[in-house]
Length: 429
Image 1 (cartoon, rainbow, N blue to C red):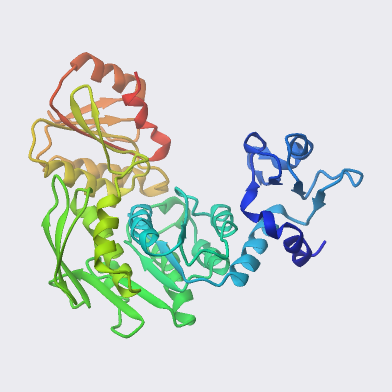
Image 2 (image 1 turned 30 degrees about the horizontal axis):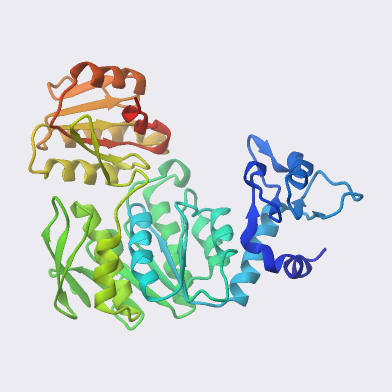
């Protein structure tokens, strides 16, 4: 069956695609994706038994089974359906990538735009070769804007995702040392992220440049399609000044209008995300009143700059992801809280490859100069440095036992690490 025929057959149910038989509801479409440790083809019959209206397979196939469609490759089929759907529903699309801040910026922008127009945005971090097409296939004719987050951990990833999402606007939030294991070098990482700008520039779309980031600034050439934003010290069209970073961000816009904005976020790192969301929103015509309301409405969750109360301590739970740049930003932000004592609990920074030892060493050396009372290092990736501030535990369970034993209250505690470190388990009773 040709892809155009499959699209026509499934067009009314494209927003009901599932890839896990445990999530199937009657009428859903099951795509039998494969991975290193699973093969969805093996669950095709079970999917039909669970109520799927169609199953798409590329290996297991029984012609006598009704509503089982054989394709050369299930993932390619999914992506091609998304391409067709995106072309058919040609609404304005904003593509966002970057080493840090892309999810928070996306959520801020969605909080603003959804007050203005019917907007579809990437859910969570569905930003890879599977998540992007699944997001696009949820587009409906009633949507007026789309915000797509684009992730990458190897060269060429962004170019591939752009060929599916076809963004009209582009933002690179920051360029830092993330996923170096997959890229091989920082230069390759930059080259890959820039694939978003190159794609959108070819179709004469608009590119948004954070001129506070020197790695992004050098690509900026003032024009109608290159829109710069940053502090009042930068030569940008949209200029801002950070008034307060703790306990909540308050900022002043200086150009092209004078406004004061307040948020529920904290820290200079989140300030960069806020001014990106304001800039894009203003440039596409969102009223100031809705921008102000959207910023205030957004409260961080999902272990991204999330503030919790735990055993009479204030906890900053930022354990969804970590790389050298985001780790430094989180540590600086903790040091700027006007509270005492302060404890940083640090898990590993994953996917750094041959750079791992060096980057973990640099983070500890950097942290020792900050106004942080104790630093609890969890995992074997941290080099042992003899210092009164530093405490080492091999596992989360050992760190949890340590926290139980000290039983302190009134602290401000940062919990920061890569997803695979699972530091959120420290808070579970």
